[in-house]
Image (cartoon, rainbow, N blue to C red):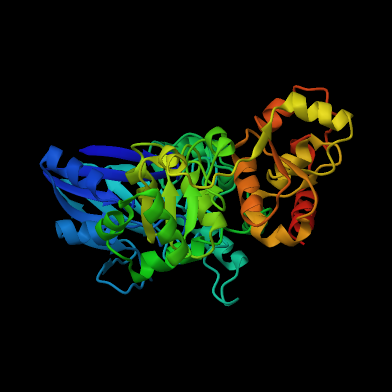
Length: 484
């Protein structure tokens, strides 16, 4: 028996490869099939099944392309309805793979079709559970992503999740290994651990949602409290996973078109393409194509694109670090952005050599920021971190302007004013600065190093309260204030 977790840090996502006696299963694969095909070839195994734990919202799964290329059967849990052929399982169904057996445990709550796959070893002993977004390490799946026009509420789903955990998962032996679909950094839960697997027994002792004395009502209240609105692309990705999507090979072929500066400019104008600059924040600040936005590849690139670009069909052109063009196109496709039309061949060096117009972004260090504050040269400070980060501590008189909701809050800022922006480390603030500049805000200043650098200066800071002492009501009220 071989069990391998294939973890993708930028999405905090875990796929799984399980093999026995020359037969294999892949659980929750990402969009691109090549890594899985290479793995199968290396091991000399035949892919028998592709298990999906639910209709993923935070990424587009690779089940369709993988099935077409291998002949494997796509497997979903009970109640899953798709626009393509699948094997819809029954609760308690046994599926054989080599000398192993998978038992289907229907565990609705995160979504109605959410399913956990219980792996039994060659001797028939319970070995591991692949829980998808039902049970994470330190948390459980949020129950608000599958509400349908009010007919199913997050409270309904929370109750189902309580029953699923108590009746299907917590009854298993403590030594059973828990393999979830996500780790820390995913928006599919609230408080996930950085660990990517654990024993069920340890989760029973340490996971707040598995407390033995927890009532159903207490559970529903805790798992539904303090949920940030899901990113706008979640529902769209779930629809693609359920209804089907364009072949990844075609998406990659279209996106991997190197364009000269002249051709790049013509395509941008003809297709009304969004230009995404994926280089470092420093490189972007020094010089970029006017109207382009910064979302660096060395960060949570795909989730930020998903949060900030409303239309999955938006035509996109990219500026990338040399040699990372395919990575950028691939990571865009993982969250459903399949309309990448090419990249700038030769990068910004080629653009400048062609005599094209170049813009820059003022970016200052924290000590310069401190000096300007003392000299009363800073009219407005926009803190683009999350409300919880802002509430813990922030610059005196700063306004919370979370990057996640910049599109909704754009009406709150004035193009004639000057704004100084910061986040925690400098990534999010440069994203926000680039969006403001692209929309006509000429007076935008980024603070390099963000809060990490600012708190080391003598700038007057406000410690709202230690985060651990902030009540849930206060958090909810603060979030409502930000979004109102």
